[in-house]
Structures are given as C-alpha cells and as structure tokens.
Length: 85
Image 1 (tube, rainbow, N blue to C red):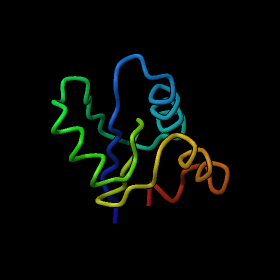
Image 2: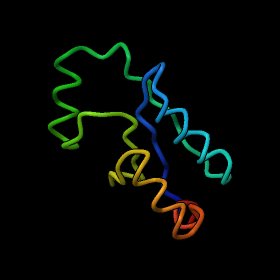
Image 3: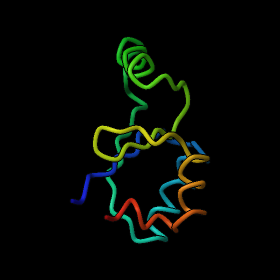
Image 4: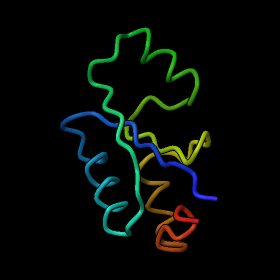
C-alpha cells in the first residue's frame, strides 16, 4: 500500500532542498509542509513529537524516517524503491 510521504521543510534550508531533489530524482511523490510561519508553540510540540530539532523531517505515513541523512541511507540501500511500495 502506498503511504503518503511528507517533508516538513523551511525556506533557505539546503538539506530540505537536497531531500526534495532526491525524492524527485527517484520519482517518489511527496507533499511539502512549509513550517516557516509556525509559532514557537507549534514548533515545540512538533519537536516533542519527533525528537528532532532540525529540518527536513521526512515522514512515510505516520512513521518518521528522519532527515536528509536517513533519506540518503535508504537511497543507498534501494534507491528509495521501498518508499514507493
């Protein structure tokens, strides 16, 4: 079953650009959620939920796979094919 991929991202974030570019290059559909305008409270709640204080934060369904480094690891294993299934 295809699970929706969401990339939580900010403007001027080089790793966000790299993550989205890699997903596009591999033909993996995703949704971008820009968080630049989030309040401090929204950001604090998100950090509590994910345990990460950086972006991008990449989710497959409800599962956090991590940031760009983790996405790159998955790419090295299977060229992101596992994200398309």
